[in-house]
Image (cartoon, rainbow, N blue to C red; front, side, top):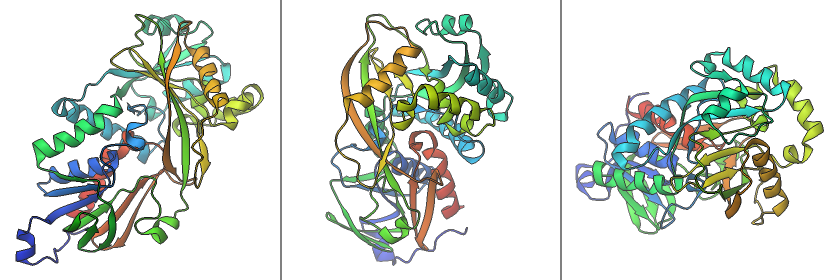
Length: 387
């Protein structure tokens, strides 16, 4: 696509309120677009209604997941985004806390999925490990495992601090203007009308997260998004416990499409429906990552509704913890914090891009993969606009 032709007069361009790119939303999707734009020398404005990062971008695992993402476009985007995270993190003062992913499994049907996965393109550089070899890398794995997959591709950052640090670095190092506590009332391209004043830009990118109504509601409604509520836990594993990698389990093999779309996954689905119907009913699968202070972030569950309730039943947390204890032998582990997150979801797509006007784009990740794919999506969107 050819670059936009600015509709702004010379006088307007000289105004402080004129930018090359205006981005609505300062979550990871919005910040990724800001980075992609400043790499092309663009003057960027980011507008967010909250005074600080508060949404799904800071309520997740900070787990940049490559292995297990859906084959094709999503997996390709995850690989590229992982590389951008690796480039940006040290510059922005963001610690990469650990690398890699261990997927220990305890059923023969799950072993068959992993064996099939390593034979695919996505399995490059991944290894099938015996129980002994897996426990040598992650000593706290439960003795019930039958085999494990090791992936070297993943990165873990602390999302609660990584997103604010990324925003601060974009401001300090790249001159991005971030306006917080401002609601965008209307986009009358090239004008962006907000509660803090009017701005102008030759390109406007709307990254609304799970807000389906504030801007272009009819355009967003056409994709039939809903909202997904998830439960998250912080766990003290006991003194001196170091995992050194993220961990998942059998349940993830029927949720992550890179595994679940393999023919071998059908047998595991049938077994889990018999053995763990409660976990499936609550959308539970297991991810465990470790923070710099030694605590573990553990989750999660998936419940879908247009307006998810604000309540977090203990029974769902217990289902997550049961799977946690089936994978990791940590008898002293105790929960120290609980929270929920909400992200947008579509049943038939992982993200969507819409162009309601020639100079405007709506970008919504609808699969909980924002941290893992946003940098690549942003490169595509900004590249489409500016070439």
